Image (cartoon, rainbow, N blue to C red):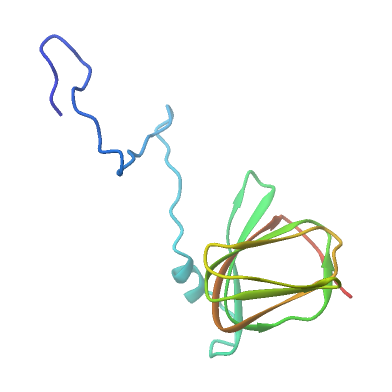
Length: 141
């Protein structure tokens, strides 16, 4: 960095396209999560396609669980005790509701309200991130 004489302030700024990482006053930084690696380490017994793999990859403030899922899925009808947010990273996800289906592709998400009856399905390959309450319960139906 260049400093002007007698100044402790930088005269150069980072390019706008490259944001700088900042540390909190405690010197701690966040944690990077590689979803592909997390899914590859899942101990699920069904490793070959078309199995669906779902792995918890973290929590946020102890209130939200982050799950990554990939593979092929033809889910059964169910309800859950909290909202769920499904962000599609690759492939296509379809969630069927009593009122009809919703589909989402890469960069799109589907919000499912608590208690809403639904089922999810994905094609040959889908990678998604699910955000839900810790301890969320699912019931058939």
